[in-house]
Image 1: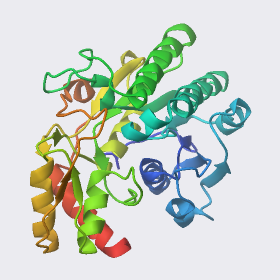
Image 2: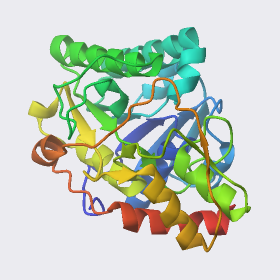
Image 3: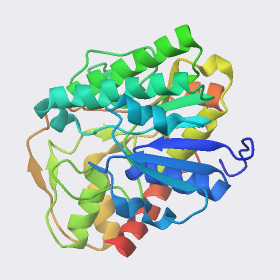
Length: 323
């Protein structure tokens, strides 16, 4: 998967948003591989508890800072070989409520990081994009280059990030690779709050014998992607060939799961007999999502090992032991 990947000895990886769900898993995986990790996070959505296990590790460094500040980005990129840019505010509904903040954080912040990476001559800049950039394009599976009208400020931000990264690859020779994540889930994903992702939220509520709310009729489908697949994609992107630079890639398993089916799978796995509440659809949500991952397989060597069932079983066990 990625355990046999090799980078030059003493390679330093900067992970922005490193105290978040995806970022902290990247920190952990890279430390286990024996490389150096510098974690940059302002702890606005990330959690110190996610990175507490790494404190004191000889290869780990933490910087509390904000990507909206260019000086912070410059300092964080000093001496760095690879940047994994995960710092962003998520949630489509929240972006509709806070468009200016999302623009500053998710567009200007990423642009600051691109500039800092360029000036510090990093080897590769890998950044998180999103399946939300497909907007109202109805064709399945989703394929890079076939996008529709954007449905939220969050999607606009991610699309802008892709365009800026393309410019940095074209004009400055910075190796940039965008990863369009499809509904990532797994250990350390926050189950709490109004904007929590659906899987951890459902699991926690069912464990507490509460009735979860499904937005809409439950017949929307998603290409849920386990965190291990995302780690693999990030690391393989760092060593991808030059022809991958400036490109974006779907990162998913390539499956399709319906929300109502997932709900019943969870109730069965947790031994619960609880009927869900059906609420209104969320504004800006895409009805169906399913990824064509052939481009990532071809150019990145991406070969996801965890299907939905295997990932879900691991996630359930983690939440049982950590909630």
